[in-house]
Length: 135
Image (cartoon, rainbow, N blue to C red; front, side):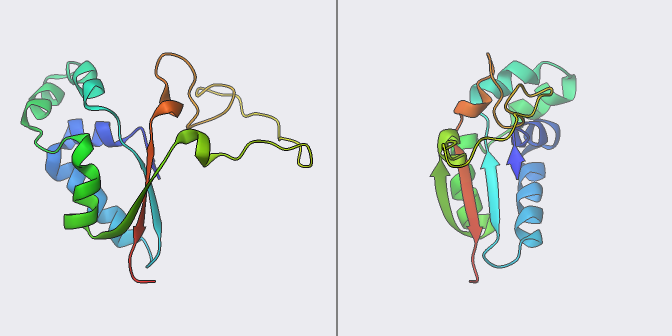
């Protein structure tokens, strides 16, 4: 599960750090295992790159952009399949037969992590679901 974190790994450790993360995730999964990734848009990288000199330096050296993550994970990293999910599809709606549990309240808003409300719009980004081969 990698929600809203790939940008920070990428900015701190560059392309090689991101590839290292993806290789470690792949290696840790059993055959048929799933990896859920929420890549941040490239425009959000620039907004955060100025927070520290090394982030700005790494930002300037990045060659692998978020739209290329799917190709990287399916090719070089070795995942077998990828499915794009919308955040709305990831959580089934509550039904009358099954009352909804009380919402979690915390730093991420009333609905919990993955459903940030407000300017960031975390719940609006697509999720990429990768499956490791071998099943």
